[in-house]
Length: 297
Ligand code: ADP
Ligand code: MG
Image (tube, rainbow, N blue to C red; front, side, top):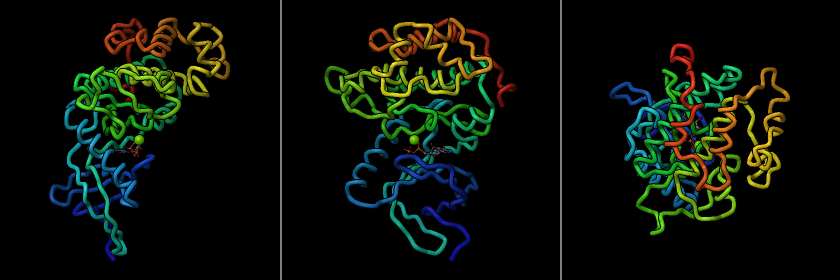
């Protein structure tokens, strides 16, 4: 019996979170004393192990290409690790050692702070877009952007994480389009739902539009898959009713004209008409007044 569980030589301190594929724990490197997040994928059966190997490869390939303050830093990965529980029993796993984001997920920060005002939403949105731009510049499409995969470090810097679904440019077919049907329902671009080929950057722009909407309103914009969702129809037809319905239960549910135009154009049905990251950065809403780091920390 030992006081702590161990992941190879790392000392396991506490649980941090759980996703569809992995458990994430805070661990300490006994040699340096530094604390990290370990994303652990437990071996269970052969089919799952093959899938996990893909996840780890995706994350490693993607994260090794990107070095940016708004993307988590991958320190180390091991595809044949051993987890030792306090009672001495062991299991085999793969794991990645990632920089620790002790301030948790975007949702936690959202619900602690109450509804973001536009200046605060803009502050975080800038970091999301900067991080995303760095991904795309490196030829990486994230494909699973959602609030659970957006974390905050000790200084409340936003960090995009979970590149398990990510796609690096080498794997593209000759036409430069992707085909795989994946992601998370509420954040998935309509062309993925429709199982059409898609270009990477535009699906991440779509998910960022959903996230921005949630950051500001604290509610998802749609309840069903786009484009059949009735709210989506209202939005894409530029009907004011969409915004009225989303203001109903909000004491100060006001959306500026610039915000409405940015969201509508980021969520365009046709990916060719959807705003690109460059166009998002040039949009009047993006360039409006912004909260200072002291205000949000
Ligand atoms: P999955 O691929 O299973 O979704 P994630 O990489 O998204 O795994 O991690 C699952 C959860 O663990 C995240 O949503 C978050 O709450 C937590 N987590 C992941 N990485 C970190 C980190 N670096 N620091 C702190 N918490 C983390
Ligand atoms: Mg995740």
